[in-house]
Length: 249
Image 1 (cartoon, rainbow, N blue to C red):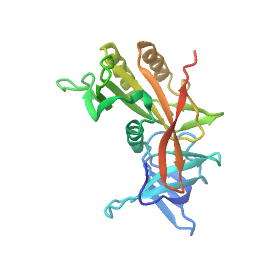
Image 2 (cartoon, one colour):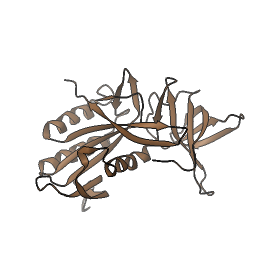
Image 3 (cartoon, one colour):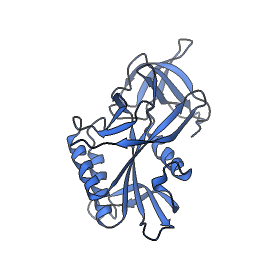
Image 4 (cartoon, rainbow, N blue to C red):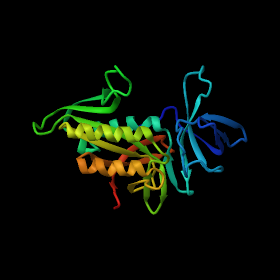
């Protein structure tokens, strides 16, 4: 994924109100960015960190600049724009990087599915991707839920989630239901962190998510993770490498 126009660099002053971050530019100017990750951003928001941001063409936007990348531990780059995760995964499917999801004729995004969350509504959620029309008659339609990972804790280990996620619990249960109904169900972790090569559930942060993730795996939900290459000079982020998903007992 090429980010256009090219990324600009600054130094993080502070992140606040979940949606905002102040960055100091080379000339000393202070700029307020939109922060697209409204979660905890654990280990990704230390003041003094180098950051890179994009600029929107729309002059009417209140905050035209969007925080995209942060450097952590003075060496690893982390993509914190969670809104790019689905596009990164789709690109990796279409370019055959994610081989587990190849062989389908069509990819549909944001397809309604699951149990209704309010009375009389038709659908409960929207699956990130529905892959249909496999050239393998033994391969059913594939429901793919995407989760963005940015929490690294050292020694190549990444954790998900970085905060309690009730929505994530619901998505896991719906993937379990999809698998029980006879379809493929895949949870794809989009790891925008160059220092992560293996992934585990963050049991200490959200034990219920860890429990449901293990239950999903036992039910036949496929857990896959792909790591990103982040190049700030070229303004490119792309998924390039398969990672290990571990479920410690």
